[in-house]
Length: 466
Ligand SMILES: *[C@@H]1O[C@H](CO)[C@@H](O)[C@H](O)[C@H]1NC(C)=O
Ligand SMILES: *[C@@H]1O[C@H](CO)[C@@H](O)[C@H](O)[C@H]1NC(C)=O
Ligand SMILES: *[C@@H]1O[C@H](CO)[C@@H](O)[C@H](O)[C@H]1NC(C)=O
Ligand SMILES: *[C@@H]1O[C@H](CO)[C@@H](O)[C@H](O)[C@H]1NC(C)=O
Ligand SMILES: *[C@@H]1O[C@H](CO)[C@@H](O)[C@H](O)[C@H]1NC(C)=O
Ligand SMILES: *[C@@H]1O[C@H](CO)[C@@H](O)[C@H](O)[C@H]1NC(C)=O
Ligand SMILES: *[C@@H]1O[C@H](CO)[C@@H](O)[C@H](O)[C@H]1NC(C)=O
Ligand SMILES: *[C@@H]1O[C@H](CO)[C@@H](O)[C@H](O)[C@H]1NC(C)=O
Image (cartoon, helix red, strand yellow):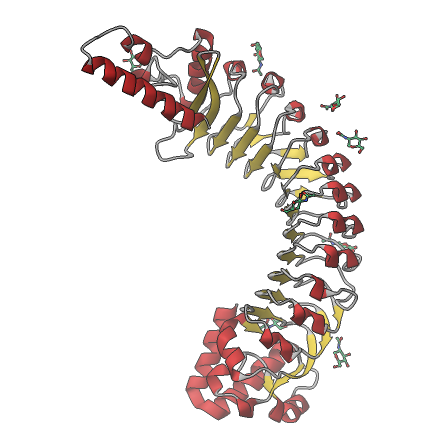
């Protein structure tokens, strides 16, 4: 918006100046074009604020005194209000190739808060050392205008997020990713009712997620991943009815997946991986009818897959339930999710057979069920193994076998004994560890059938899978 109007105005000014020259009338409008109509206090505040970040050497030299109209300063955008330029956007740090890079000791000067038309403020890769704690003072001066606030990759920003951020009532986007912030998540975020994007990932935030986060009914994206958050997922999250993406992965969250989650009808991504969620899979999951990616891996969820009507998740493309302590069988309804591309059920306690119907899923390109207790014959055909290649993993299921006669060697799935030799192998290695059992039986089998090349290919594919 700011850039567009800048270009637009600059074009008009250029045209009128060219017009002036063509008509041979000089002077009258020329100065007006070159000298930006910008209130002096605004201009001084802008220069001082930028100097704080970029260093004292910077004075806008060749651009001076025209920060907006003619040749706007990199990273600055402006709009006209009542005939004067005001700064509406400020991007500090190496966001674009030609952006203003920060000094080694950048400071946030109080002049920044005099830019009271700022709608968008972003810091990228600016604060490193020495560590800076952002004061909460003066931020409320921007509450009448600021809609987007962003801190990315500033490892030198430490301490808590300024409490005053929750007074920036116009904020639609708050992105705080990859910085050194710690302490509790900002409180009273629930007051920022216009927020559509809230990303607080990859910092050192700890403590619980406040109930007030569930008040953000216009929120589309909520990403609190990669922190040290504890406690459970607030039941109030059922109020995030507009939500499209919810990522709480890589924290230390405990407790159940709340049933209230079923209210999130527009949710396309739910990622709770790498936490300590327990209490089984809630049936409400099947009501997330817009879901495309469900990633719950590495939790202690427990329970089984049976209670859920997987066929309801018609759009699901990624289902990752690996390392979630699941027990019981794999229901056929899993193979009725026609859009499925990735299915990860590895490292659980699943038992029973693997339905050959999975081969009918045209988009399926990764299927991992290794490290379970599956049994019986794998009844996929050579075409399926050929298509999946190394993205099919079923090793470490001690009672699973593949009917080898039907398959050429190069299509045989890795680490699964042949049904024909099942008796022979198990009688030799009754109580060995699974790994030992598999290496011995598979190496033996392959060596016997194919000589050195076969053994070599086992070693190679083993390494590549790992
Ligand atoms: C800006 O700095 C340059 C040197 O970096 C100097 O020559 C110039 O006079 C300064 N301009 C103003 C307006 O301070
Ligand atoms: C807040 O603004 C006042 C008045 O401009 C100033 O004296 C003070 O240093 C500012 N504080 C911070 C942390 O910028
Ligand atoms: C939250 O909003 C309410 C009403 O809009 C207001 O009374 C309260 O002071 C606000 N709290 C914070 C921390 O902004
Ligand atoms: C969140 O909403 C509840 C009621 O829905 C209200 O009592 C509470 O004050 C709100 N919190 C904030 C921070 O706005
Ligand atoms: C869900 O998405 C649909 C279609 O994009 C939209 O019309 C509807 O308003 C959304 N629901 C909510 C609660 O945001
Ligand atoms: C996860 O939670 C279980 C109880 O549900 C607990 O026994 C276990 O120690 C927790 N693990 C971690 C890594 O916090
Ligand atoms: C694995 O499944 C077999 C039946 O196929 C069962 O006898 C055995 O107890 C199971 N082992 C574990 C560790 O669940
Ligand atoms: C099979 O399981 C054993 C024991 O759980 C483990 O040590 C080994 O790494 C696994 N093998 C593969 C190929 O994952």
